[in-house]
Image 1 (cartoon, one colour):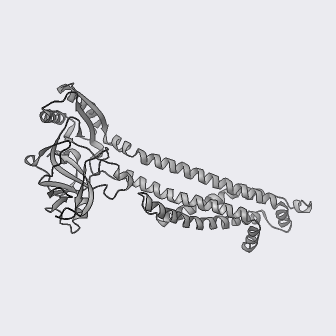
Image 2 (cartoon, rainbow, N blue to C red):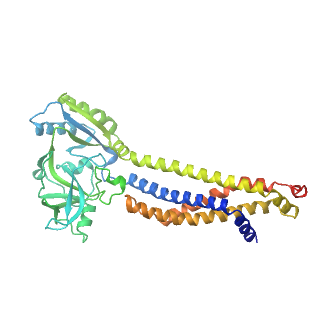
Length: 405
């Protein structure tokens, strides 16, 4: 059995073996946490927004003057956009999912309005909001034209009726009876829930960080009236590219005294919203690659050093009948013992490090499976790394021993 001779040999070279095992442990701890973080960010990037993403684009409109007839101008703009042959519907609103800074308000859990429940995003919509966003209304109804009021920047109003997302309904009314219930806004007002939409992501970066309130949205029936607002347009299938060109031209036909900016398809809005996540994934992937390369070179260097030290011993074993495969197996087994010890320590370090990070940063706790996958990657890498120096050791001829080298 080769294990005991290998262990005795490692005791005589314990400093080098301990350093490599420690390097493997640190590498594994970092890699396992990185894999967990990458997976979380991929999940956040792939989360559906709840709207008809493939056929929606948005633009920001600002009039160059300060017109007094804002409401009439907005109505004319919306009528013009809706008249385009490739448009399903259009909406003037304060924001759209993943687009940036949001309106939000804290929700309360009861009529005393003092017990904080969650932060929710506020979307200002009219009777066209449902068809414009392409929302899936799973219960109740949408707003009628008679319910739609008017709200301006800086105003705080709470209408009699609201539509909420399923996340809000489940959290505040876990019994499943949210429809028809009163929704309380902390230290403010209250509204009755008349409809429940399946999903609507927030405009802010909350979903990028796994915020538990990432889909907490409330729709209020107010026409947003402001000099500088967002038009959201939903097109017919395969008409988005044409309408991206036609919509600004149609608005400029009404008046050139305006600035049209941030003309973007929703796919572009999503891409920009997740730039930070993509950068983090790339950075972690590069870091992991460098760490694995450094670890592999460390294993190669140490094994080459040991091969040089043991040339006479290897030659004697060959002279006594050891085959090349026996020498190769010896170094592979020795490396497996060192790497295995490092992986066991690395799993413990990875879990402890993740606990520390989760307590201080907005990341999820790492599953043990990531540490196991990382350990497998490191073990396989170390076995491949030791293969070349082990083959060189196996090629040492028996004559080395007889020459007294």
